Length: 127
Image (cartoon, rainbow, N blue to C red; front, top):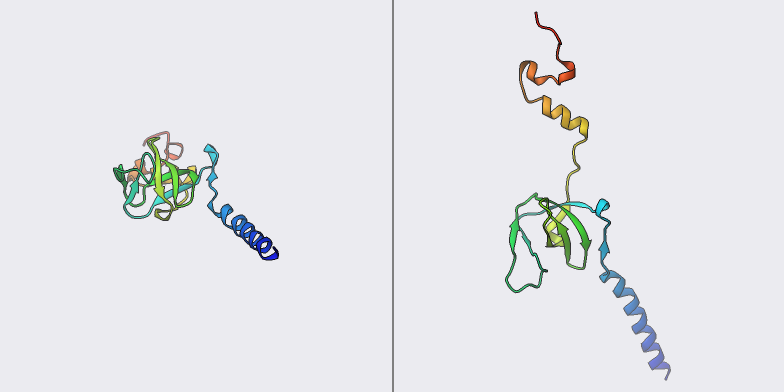
């Protein structure tokens, strides 16, 4: 009887320690992590176990949002709003978006002459 009791205690401890690792994480829409694809990444519309194979392949560096992370695969949303599944090992954290100031500076630094200046720095008169 003591052996059976200790067996069930051990089994209970094992189950309690394993099941939390299999839980999923669901992110609120405004807090979903921004990730990018590593290499050519298979994208599945209906789940990774669908019989027809991947619906499309995402190119390396493709940026997407993770809606729900499960064991092995994540539910993601693409830039065009399409939702589907991607393997977790095919994702990495995407580089941060440039700040509005950096975007503004980048926009005006590509030209030459007066075109390279932002509108508020252009002279309002001509000689």
